Length: 329
Image 1: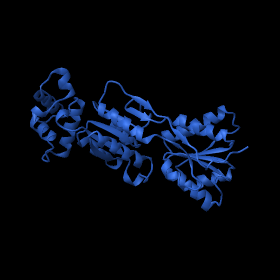
Image 2: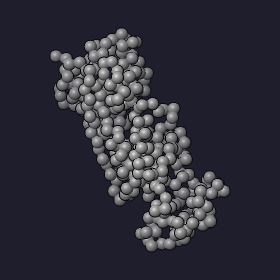
Image 3: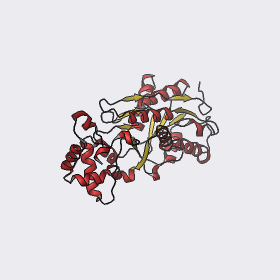
Image 4: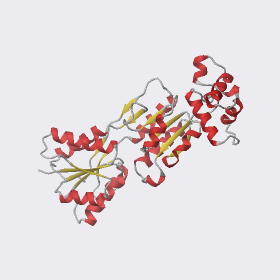
């Protein structure tokens, strides 16, 4: 086992592999034989002991020799019951898997409902498409391991590849304002990104001289109630952020439940994937994130394995104009 091991610490301190094993064993309070069995994936080691050894090894900067194996990347994502087919997380996960596969990296999917498994395996890096506080707490506890996060919320702890939510809100607000809309609503997610999108829209409309701020509706309430309130308030346009399926549902609610027309009675601006919303009737105008490019950059960062400086890389959104926004005089 010892001849097949190399660590960042071994390179820096000129320690032998055997000495590293002794340090890990001492920190984990086990024998060097137990450490060796853990790194050989022996089933004879109890789970609690295995976790303790792996935690100690990570804290010391230990990893199996990269030169004799493929890098192993953990992809941390939301639980299956929350994933929307064709939505952001589903699509981004596919792009990340494609990009990692092209680089020959091994992939382990860890969903948030089993986030505890993350501490029981060897990884050379982590990419997170997740939101739960417990997930973030666990990831922040990792040391000597590159972690890439797909928003700027935790830029002080992880590499970040992201689209600026506040700027996106400003783009949406200015676009609708320039099309003549003065009473605008936004339906957003109940999270850091959602609130920043809504705040970006509020700020730009205030700068443009809007008499009233945009009406903001959070997704913690039933969507049909939010849509009804948008219509009852006399809004002429609504920006539906987040998953594509939400804007599809808003289309159905406006037309089938409320009997209104798009865009004659309500203009709808969507967000994320243009492929799906281009087949709506009328085809939806959308702000689109470059998901493939974001995924490829995230993979580049995690495989680069640079722990000296946290990277923060921003990508712009693109506006795809179709037929769901009415020009007002």
